Length: 162
Image: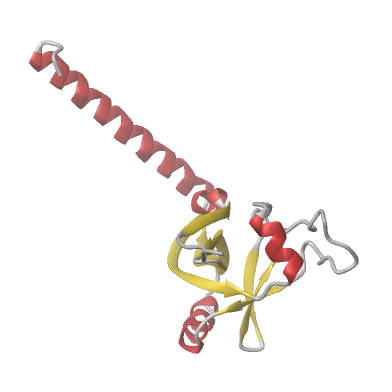
């Protein structure tokens, strides 16, 4: 049987990029049971309410929903159980120092398989205020409007041949 290579996305937290200012990101391994891996391979997971926290010098992923495996029996897992993240000691120390600051949390950005191993991308995040979100939307709209004006000017200059 050939080994799995590349990256296969299982779940993504698009809302995190909208709700938070993201600082540092890390890729971490996950400690999973057999039925959790099978449910993830089926492409079923939700990072919507997920967060990570440091407890006793270890980083734990909480609130992530991996539904029960449909063909599982009594060996099935609890869908929202805390899952240990596998990080280097240096990375954990850096996360501990940075999460001591007020308003900083750890959010999962994506859950995927890389070369057959389950990984999660986590980021240090600071919550955005509502005016920050409005500014981001206004900036994006202004960029689109400038691009429209530039393309219209280019079309007018070339006589519509461009």
